[in-house]
Image (cartoon, rainbow, N blue to C red; front, side, top):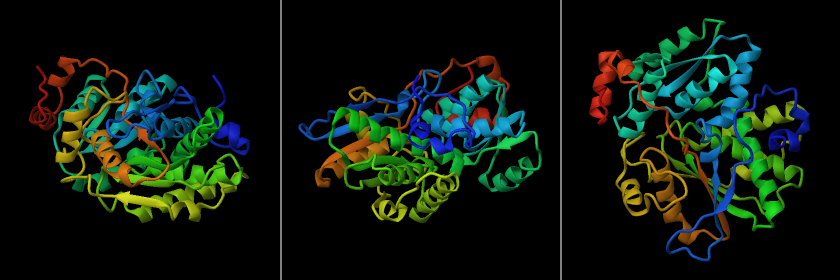
Length: 360
């Protein structure tokens, strides 16, 4: 397997950034055919295929964060987030590969079948689970976890600079692929914005690619499609994380580039969020009904359907080539263990039932 783009393009980081290979890189950059947009230079970055175990954009973040956990001598790695957290499920499936015990501190979200599938798999896998009854309890419980040196705690989505480095690598990888295919340079990237780690890493990565003349085209516009509400997905938070990531790159001796120029082209779109995180939107459901099964990547109500709705609405006014970031894993989920589901806390079983999934 070739060297990940992060270290091939930024060799100053190799050996200085914690890293363990979990994914299969590079993920494909494929033409995307959409009815009504024939003839457009439209592509999809298949992050959903990053691993046959469990893919999606979270794998890039885990490659640095789980390695950091090992460096610190942690025995247990805690994911944090909502009940249906993709990051928690990704960590639950990949952490044991490194000898780390997965655990999750989760707060409630609207009950949907997609979210319930993730939570039920965490229960079935025997993950040490603290499923809170209210998000109000989350800050205190999170603070308690930080007191143990044997626990390595990841913020929701791994949204820290070290985690965002994985998505810097994704931007560098994209630049390599466009060069190799002599494809048109993307003028627009359309990306779901949940925990903001992917968006921030792409901003910093494009700036770094332009600094080393790897990105030969004009600076692209990054369109962040909100699937998590403000203030989590505030533009200021995205650019702040991008700045911290670029500062980390610079401290490690690599060229970080003109981040301000890239951040000025960040557009955040909130109209596709609907009634909030995890709540299906009418526009997203219409996309699932119309395109479900016809696209090469999975559509689900929390992330991909809302982001695809944004793509469809934006395309008529976008000039030049565009790349859609497919972030939801395509890998089959592990089977459920009904016996473990029956032993889950009563409030968890009730939440799963409201989402349409029962222990029996």
